[in-house]
Image 1 (cartoon, rainbow, N blue to C red):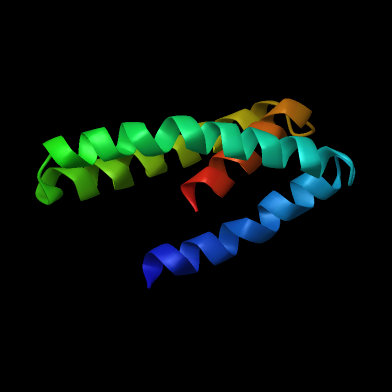
Image 2: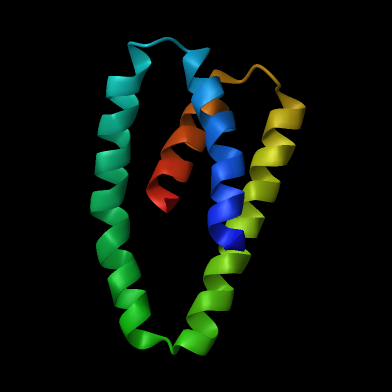
Length: 96
């Protein structure tokens, strides 16, 4: 519940950041999400097959929290950062 609730709180932020970049940008970002997923899914499968769930799930949550904190710092340092918005879009779409 909390995971889905937090995702639905962050998703409008992702969409508004990309809307500021322009509609033509979405097709390139979708391609970047696809390429990212091609790399991440096998890596996640390899990690998940070697770690017990008691270590995997907290590790995933810690990774996501660390990423969200890094994005908060990046957006605070450069509020209009187009590259930060692009990376955030790809990261959140891949995490979804």
